[in-house]
Length: 249
Image (tube, rainbow, N blue to C red; front, side, top):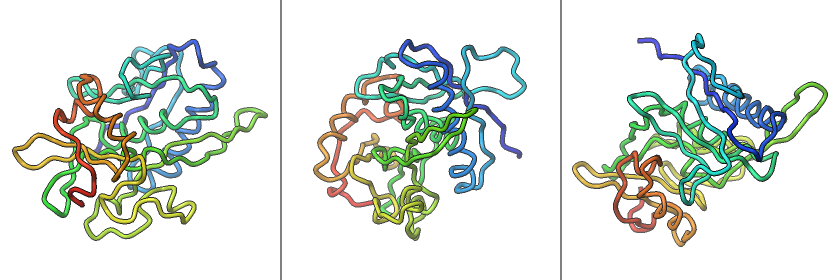
């Protein structure tokens, strides 16, 4: 069966971002989608578009991601989720007009898992949530964007490559690693500094793993576990946090 095509529409509801800045950030996300994410995963890209209003009756269904001053989720700058099978999300307007990392993060994960319901079996028998940016969420790299006569260099989020999800996968495991040669994750299902993942065992409550001694990541996940709009909550995580060193994937 042919996969349904969507468009990812970022629409402005923030006083902190101009039309021009939004256009550049979304253009960077779109370039990353077309040139990096889609080829890496062998998928058709979903176009990322900036809107004032989401148009009614668009020929391609739109995944709406609202740009706000505050996403109203403690400890997070953005999230995507789904309602009745339809994905949607929110992102907080960046304080730096060259920072598109949160926008890219949500666009990537919405493309790869729009239903927020995919899991991948790990070598130890557990399953990891199919969230491609969370394991390396502090990582970023630059995309140059030209609109008219202006060029900007914008940051977009790093993401794990298909090799990351394979038990016998080999480096590189993230797009940053592929582009720069600098290793950030040393094995499949591993975590970069600042990264985390939600995992579960059959019949048990999901837990969140994080890089050893990374108190910042642990605290952020702990705050989000009760937020009903967050991916963390949507994945079913209500339980304890454990460091990656406690059980290596």
